[in-house]
Length: 355
Image (tube, rainbow, N blue to C red; front, side, top):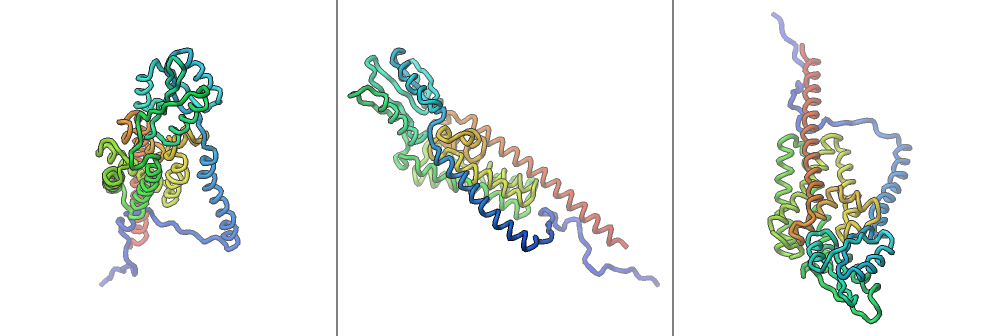
């Protein structure tokens, strides 16, 4: 009578470890190399953080800031020449009259305008909702160019909410939304969700985050205006873009992908967003690159939806949707790659234990 020998350990199954990428372990660094790595990495990290945050703040100034001039040609020509004499500070647009300039401000084509009458008396049209520091900058520029003894009239075409006249709360509210997106992507990764479940987690978490953020910032604090559901959708889209970015990089790169996502969302995205002033107030290339990142695009879209009835929101909306689609594709591709690796590992283990 023959007996079949049984393996002494549990047989691995294809499902084992299918919920998350296979763990990777390697020998630890020798103590000397680990010490050198710590000594070198910490100063480099501090230098990177200071560069990302302090450099834009120290170089805050207008760079091709779009503004308008309107009124009699003889007067507006002198005003346009005076603005052009300030280097690349302003990008001047000419309008026939005050009504055209106001429409351009409401559509977010310009940040403000200088309107003159036949006597050359200036009126400054601003939009404090588009950035309080920019509005103040335009008023000061008009006062410098006004003839001696001539006062400057200021009209706020799109004023900031009474609860946040300087836009400080608007800028401060951006970081929690970025952190919510980062946390969503991290949770998707560490819980091992992939494929359709990962996408459902991203969508559900972003939707609830958008609703809660709108309840706090719009309904309670009153720092955001506009259509409530449009604001909630914009807030949720910002969280979704951040979560999809982190989860997508993590699906392709493993846990290091979380660091890549954090770099784009917070370390570079937050100080380069222009949320506290305007993207055109940042030095190049931060003023351009920041608007291609989820944080900067989300800030611009939120301003457009909350204060300008969506004016000027087409480009940032496209950027956010692009990050969402790319992140979702990466999550699906990474999930399939992980499933393939898990199935191959389990098949190899079964082959080794086969009698």
